[in-house]
Image 1 (spheres, helix red, strand yellow):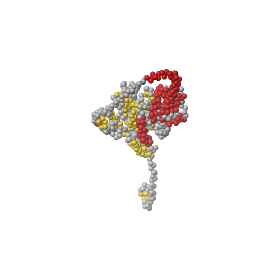
Image 2 (tube, rainbow, N blue to C red):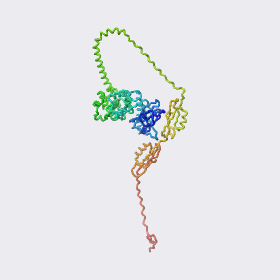
Image 3 (tube, rainbow, N blue to C red):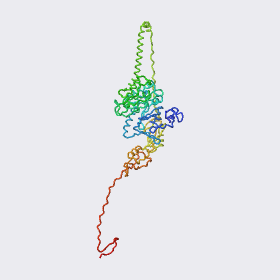
Image 4 (cartoon, rainbow, N blue to C red):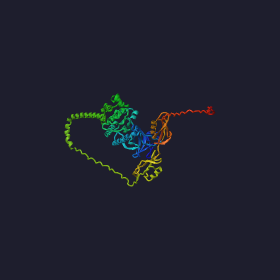
Length: 565
C-alpha cells in the first residue's frame, strides 16, 4: 500500500523493505482480505487518514490501523458500527462505503446514538495525555456514521498475553494497573462510563504498561442511570446491572469489570458470570488462592470490587485505588513513623552527654556565616511565529458535479497545480454513468496554494443494479421480504387460479435478470375463481295437438294416402 510516496505494510504501517511480505509483522500483503462489512486497506477518510487492516470488531464498532498523512504517524481509527442496527457490504463491483440502517423505525435511535458517540469522544479528547487511557485525537462524520481517531498502541491484549504466557505476577500487575485506575477516576468525573472493560480491551505494551482502549460502549451517566439502556455485557466481566435494560449503572459498573479483569489476569481463569452469582456464588475468591502473589489486603480489595450487589461494592475508582494502594502505604508510613519515633527516643537519651560539648561549640558556630548565592534567573525562550506567505496565490474551488473525467481534468488546470487527483467510483441514481457525483473539497471553498495536496473526485457507475430473485411459489410475505433485501419495489396483481390462495404465480421480470434498484416488480398472486351461479333452462311451451281432417289422411312419412269416404 502506497502512502505519501512510500510503500507501507497494511498490517503495521511499517515501511515495506521486501516485496509482498512485511519484515516486521510478517503479513503477506496480497493474502489479506477483510470481510465485506469492513472498509478496505488504502481507503482514505477525511482526505487525511489512509486505512490499513482491521484491528478488531466489537458490538459497537470496527477498529482499523491507519496512517495520518498530515502528521506522518500511525493511528487507530474506531468506526461506529452497531451491528444490531446497521449493515454494509463492500464488493469489487460495489464500492459503496456507507452504512445502512436495517429498518426506518430504527433511524432516530441510530442518529441519537451517533450523536452521543461523538459527544463522548469530545469529552474524552480533553484527557489527551492521561496515562493508561488511549488518547483521542480527532473525531468526524463520514459514510453515514462516525469515526474516532486515537493513538495507536503497539501491544497485545491482556487476554492474548495470559493465553500465551499464563497469569501475570501479582506485584507487577498491581504496578501496571495503578495509572489505569487513576485515569478512569478522572474520566468518570466527566460523567462518561466505559461499560466494556475486559481483558480484550486492555493492552499490554512492549514497555510493560497497561492501556485501556475501545470506548465504543461508553455512555454519559445520569445521577441515577436507571433509564432504559442498551444491554451490553461480556460474560464473566460485566456486573449484573448490565444484564438489565433498567439496571442502575454508575462508576461502580466499571469498578466491577476492572476487578474481574484483574481476577483473570492474576489467575488465568475467567470469573463466573455475575448473573449466575446472584443465584449461587461459589466462585473461588482470591483470598483463598495461595498461588496468587499478592498481600491479603489487595486480594480483599479486588474481591470487594467484584461484589455482586453494587451497594456493597466500591462506588468509585478513587475508593478502589484507596483499597488497593493507600492502605498499604499508610501501614508503611506508620512503620516508618514508629521507627522514627524510636530513633528520637535514642537521640534524647544521648542529648545529655553531648550538651556540654554543644555549649563549647556554640560561640564558634556564631562566627560561621553561611552564605547562599542568589538564584540565577532563567532566561525565557522567545516564541516566534512564521507569518503566512503573502505572495501565495488564492483559489476558489469549482463544482465538478456532473462533469466527465476528461472535463474535470481540464477544469483542474485552473486550480492549484500542486493539487493531485484521486478517483473513486460509486453507484448513483441521480448522476448518469461517467459523471462526477461528489468532491472531497466543497465547491466555492477559498484556499491558498499548498493548502490541499489532493482532491478526491467520485465518479458515478450509473444506477446500481441487482439480480431479480425467483419469486414464483412464494407467499406474499416471503416475496416482500426478499424484494426488500434486494432493494426492489413491488405491486400485486390478483390472478384467478385453482389451488392455494396468496401464492406468487407470475412475475413481471425474469428471475436472474439485472435491473436497477428500486425497480417495481409486478407479482401475480393466486386467488380462487369466483363461483358462477347455476342457471336453469326455461321450459319450452307445450305445442297444441294437431287435428286431422275427414278428407285427408297422412302416412307416417307425411305422404298423402287417400280420402276417407
